[in-house]
Amino acid sequence: MNHKKLVASVVLSITLMQAPSAFAMELLKYGSRGQAVVSLQQTLNRLGYNTGGIDGIFGSATRNAVIALQKKFGLSPDGIVGPATEAVLNRTVVSGVSSRGAYVRTSNLSIVSIAGRYLGTPYVYGGTTPAGFDCSGFVQYVYKQAGKSIGRTTYDQYAGGRPVSLSDLQPGDIMFFSTSGNGPTHEGIYIGNNRLIHMSDSSKKAAYDDFSGWFRTYYIGARRYY
Image (cartoon, rainbow, N blue to C red; front, side):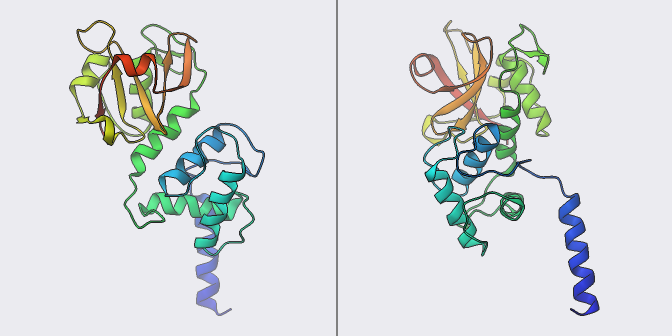
């Protein structure tokens, strides 16, 4: 290796070591479970790789999706998300290019990933911090962590952004619901695959739910801020 190539290799190695991970994953493989797997599945699906759903379980479909990604980028197709595969995922999302050549919005991926970090946070009326959130406080805080400033209340957030049709929902969009008929009374963040994360009234904490039943009945619209 000549001097220039050696210097370039060292600089690249240092850069990779210092660069913050967009996913902050541990070693993920078949049988892994948890929020890191949810983030992985969301990212793979967004890049065009079918994981069979977003359930936080690293099963055969997720492994096959990882293998497909590894093959495309010339990695050993072992189906394990180690440092090399994670680096490809980070680079692909940050560059804004998906495996299908389509543009990928990094901001909405960040919103979904950040929201998942607060799963289980308790519901507190008027709450705006990780010590406890109400529905709009949760959404505002997540967006702030993603670098987006939005209104504090459900009404403020519903009045801003860009209206989004139900057929065009994307991960990171804010979904609004009304039980009064006089404007929004509840909200959550769409995470893809017909699911959302919100401050649940029933469980009194941040939780995932399917967009069905109660949510379908009282849904009034969505807004996009990214």
